[in-house]
Length: 124
Image 1: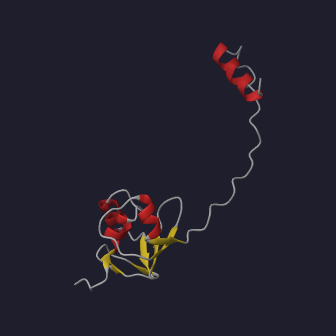
Image 2: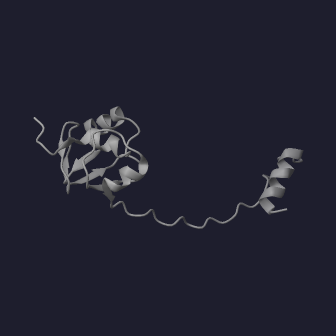
Image 3: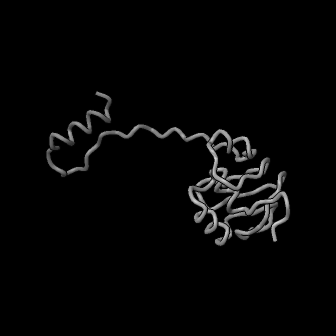
């Protein structure tokens, strides 16, 4: 039974736009990708203000703290006020050296399209 002042974790994650659909949030909970205060959460797990929810399974592990309980999906600005996002910023992208326009030996004469691509890579 749900206590007064609490919401299902799958409904809350959908309402604050962590997941695109409630079924995606439910599937993530069943797969073990959602933790509430360090404990694996089932879809019906209740969340209350002040609890920390960790969502893994994607390219980024998101950590959010519940500030406001929501049961219906809201706009992005309202959703931003309903949680505190403690997700660390992504690391800076490593500078990759520019690709050099080189062809393999014996590949023959480049086509017009390949010449344009080589010129583009060389900055001409």
